[in-house]
Length: 238
Image (cartoon, rainbow, N blue to C red):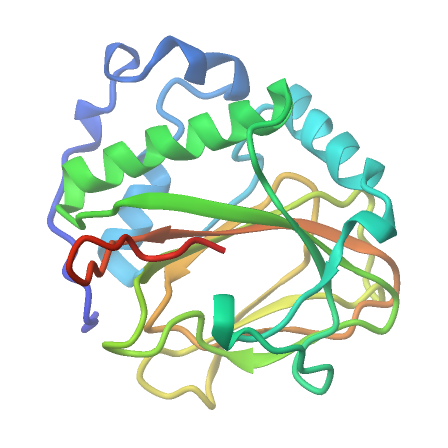
């Protein structure tokens, strides 16, 4: 695989329980929750992991996502901060950024912070932080083919999507479609947004899209970022 971001080899046997903070353990049912993910990123630059978190913690995240009232969410758009604009012809989901305002949200952010540390240790990516939001696709919503980062113009390195939907069926739509990094016209995978499934991919390398949802679809979208500082100013979040 050829990609902008170089991922260095790792030894999965290094990922022992003692390496992980105690706060990580309740959210996972596997002793080495990151090993398969790291191997996929090393070999192909993307990964799909089913049942990434424990069933109990996934249920908590689902409850959190479903409890958000529509009026508390914002229409998703394109760009960041002053460059942000709503583009309904490109995407039609609603979002709410995740801050550690309760135990469930804080635990999720803590676990992804633990993953950030492991990614930096294994691949020397220099990841600075992680940001994420809940996303709600109502019936008819979609997100057209896009990159999460443009080469040399973004601080997003790795994109993540965690799906929080029970009993997703053929015909419900809302699939994540991932395209070949060398030929974005070639589809390399199409994945249902089923409960507990985590998708991770290099942000600058893989075009992807969300097909039209035929029922309400919940997820958590997030990004591991590097910091492109100018003078003493940190890159803005969200």
